Image (cartoon, rainbow, N blue to C red; front, side, top):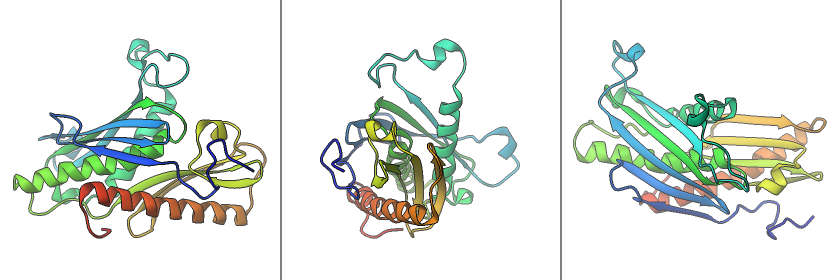
Length: 243
């Protein structure tokens, strides 16, 4: 079948990452995957959660949110309701887990790096775009620590990137936009390290079930897409080789 934007099933949307867009943050970027756009900042604090005070390590965490007009209709700010929704909590925990997998927290010292991911415009794949962009902001923050000689060496031990895959009208497709995601029979989010190991895999059948063969096909599509995204990360960060 022909996709809405004319891509082949194995093609990513156009990925653009603009770094250094926040004057005050230790790391920042704007990532655009097609029409999905996420603003990410990395903030350093010389403290850790209370439960880590007795441990010789730092912490990496994330917050995620969608601006009121990120979609075709205005969504009230969650702060107005007095609590975060379940989807928001699930996504920001996913982002935090994914980025912690990129770090040796013992090298961070008693510091916290918070990745704030704010969706400016949503057209599918906001969580995966957030993870891919958050790595870029995190890498900048770790470079800042090295430059200031606050750490012996960078806490980063690997790259992290993520992408969505799905089955739409019986066909496996990479990097779903909203019109595809909203009618997908299977929705899969894949997070991988720079060496190809899987950090997290979320694969849900929305309509019936899927086979092992289809899962393998989706994983292969996702891995190929993440390889491209990882190269883009290295390009904008000036990294010559995969970590």
